[in-house]
Amino acid sequence: MSAKQARPSPPRPSPPRPSPYPLPKGERGSGEAAVGVIGGSGLYEMDGLEDVRWVKVRTPFGDPSDAYCTGRFGGRRVIFLPRHGRGHRMTPSELNYRANIYGMKALGAHALVSISAVGSMKEDIHPLELVVPDQFYDHTKRRVGTFFGDGIVAHVSMAHPVCAGVATALAKAGKDVGARVHRGGTYICIEGPQFSTKGESEIYRRWGVSVIGMTNMPEAKLAREAELCYATLALVTDYDVWHEEHDAVTVEAVVANLMKNVSTAKEVLRRVIPLVPESCGQGCPEALTSAVITDPSAFPPRTRKRLALLLDRHFPPKAGARRRG
Ligand SMILES: [Zn+2]
Image 1 (spheres, rainbow, N blue to C red):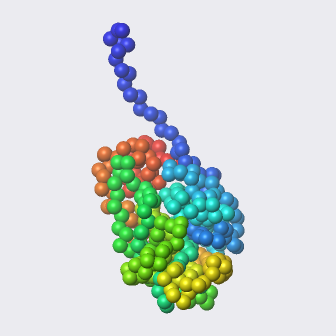
Image 2 (image 1 turned 45 degrees about the vertical axis):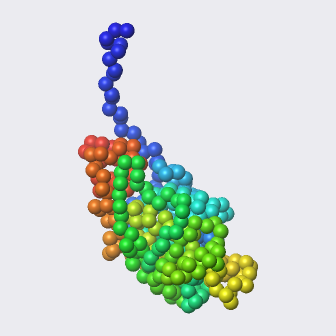
Image 3 (image 1 turned 135 degrees about the horizontal axis):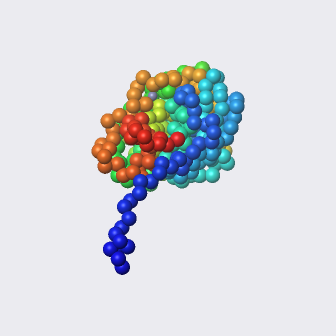
């Protein structure tokens, strides 16, 4: 073998490549503050949208639960995703929370309204009432809860996980439809898919939580990392299993409440969309400022590329480099 043959060829700079995750034409958003809505159990479509298109989004984190329904309502651009997929095909543990939130961000959502069925953990929070929690307790056990890792580390603040602007809009819309609305309180998120034992339920009550559900974590954490405003409209179906007098409530009664809540949620959505603030006064859109700990010079290129949607604004690609769409 000659010296010439043995010499390794120098690495060639790779040519810029188009994004492997392109959005369909016209779906990138125009910078207009779009309102994202994640529909929970029983809510698989949004009534009243105009210019409706179902858009499939590919993400570096896998597939979202379903296509996104984009359209307009009350003068606003709206992006709706049925959390469990149309037909309710996925358990809370099976949801790809990262893909769901990434897709919302990619389509131009600035704020997220999360519609969620919950159990009440307090005597005074009755079935069919609405709760707009201001805190979460993550009691899930096997979900990926961050976009970061693989060489890029970020620690966002979760001290105030809910955007006060969106929460205020939800509370007002809830009152406007005549519902009793409880503002504030802690939503405990359990892994499921089974409901709690009585022992667990009693322990959670001693922890002081207000409602119990299975989906808002890590949804809220990922929304924060994606710098989206996030608030939950929790609709109460039952008293979980702790309540002695309500212990005998039948599955039929719970399902009937769920369906009533879906109709309430649709009414609240009609009113809340125009009320969601177009700009946030609370810092949600700046959640990543100072949160990334890793020295940018040490960013692994592959990870940096996967996180371009989140990081480009804070760490602009080098001049001359092609931006990802
Ligand atoms: Zn906000």
